Amino acid sequence: MDILKMTVAELAAALNNGEMTSVEITEAYLAQIAALNQHINAYITVCPELALQMAKASDERRAQGKALSKLDGIPVALKDIICTDGVLTTCASRILSNFVPPYNATCWQKLVECGAVLLGKCNMDEFAMGSTTESSYFGPTKNPHDLTCVPGGSSGGSAAAVASLMAPYSLGTDTGGSVRQPASFCGVVGLKPTYGRISRFGVVAYASSLDQVGIFSRCVADCADILTLTAGDDPLDSTCSEAATGDYAAACNKGVKGMKIGLPKEFLAEGIDKRIITKVQEAADKLQEQGAEIIEVSLPHTRYALPAYYVLATAEASSNLARYDGIRYGVREQGDDLEETYLKSRSHGFGEEVKRRIMLGTYALSSGYYDAYYNKTLQVRTLVREDYLKVFETVDCLLTPTAPSVAYPLGSVSDNPLAMYMGDVCTVTVNMAGLPGLAVPYGLLDEKPLGLQLIGKPFDEAALFAVGSALEAAAEKIPTPAIAVKGGQRS
Image (cartoon, rainbow, N blue to C red; front, side, top):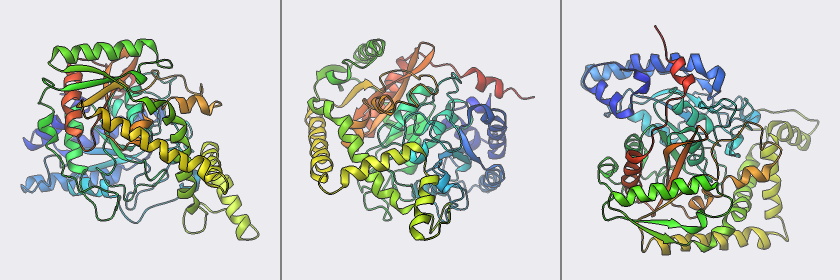
């Protein structure tokens, strides 16, 4: 069996049965990275020595019957916004291009304690600000299914790594769709959990009230297993919830009989490719055949969500990125005085999209505009969340498109930020309302992957896994990218 095509669960079973070692698995993935990363640019940093060291330690534990978890020894890739002790963490920005954290983010620390093996850190839009992974200081990531197209963003490197068989699973972050949209574009599963379900400690902040660590995998069941390992309370993050975690693996086998699934009419309107709307309706029919009840619902304040999101997110970004001054850490460009040092460090350290969002946010927070913009967005946010909570009184989850289109050509929105921002129209409300969302691959459109989105009640990821597994079973399978298969052919 080809190691690279095995799911996380299959790798775990092989390790548990002694059919292969963690070193063998890790070496296979490192070889794939060596063959493909130069073409796809999914990784900023690769850690071969560390990975093999961690893999050897895992094999030694298993030999002694002391495996830390059933997933002990399975490799993972991390978005380069997640702090890793002793490993470069750049946020794909020049200003942090030399930053090596002295501690681990909690989400990574939990995986370390489960015996995970770190393959490397994945490319992303700079400071997670973008939807294409083109704003990276280290160059754009390419979609493994079509190297002329974007992989989505901002977690495009994490999605592309899983899609191209350069990692069995990965972690990203989702502020307005940055896990779900690249998952859809790259043909993998992408989970954005409920806000507070996974700790944000050690994750470099973009918009603190919206950011959430998410998971990429090749199947829904793997995603459920990884959430089980990473979810839970964290005293280092005051926004991390104490809500009990569920039996996510069991939920994948539950089925959808008797469940009520809503179709929000606002997500099936103008601006969405009509063929994607047809795919959503087709998926709803298949779920209905499996025993679900399909109900049309309305989320009337959705129309206001996108502009409100970009005021809210940029305002928080303006505040969060004030710390990058070239003084305490990161790249410094010395000036004649302190003010000039700040000016040079920030002007040359940040890319154009990051500077644009800092300026937008600073304007929204400035005297005379705070009430007109920032406070108004908080009111819209409340209305958006109330819409969802009202709908969830009658349905168990919602089915929508993940994005208005499939992956588009590299460079096609580079000079049109508004067009890029519009790509988040299907995903931002989930972050504004703090809800869980799951992108599930659902076949091809124009020979490119298409993913559909499920939106759930707060802390009810289990329902998403139940419906997601049913959707996955009914969907047209997305083939492994040709470049990934070619890269994996080794003697």
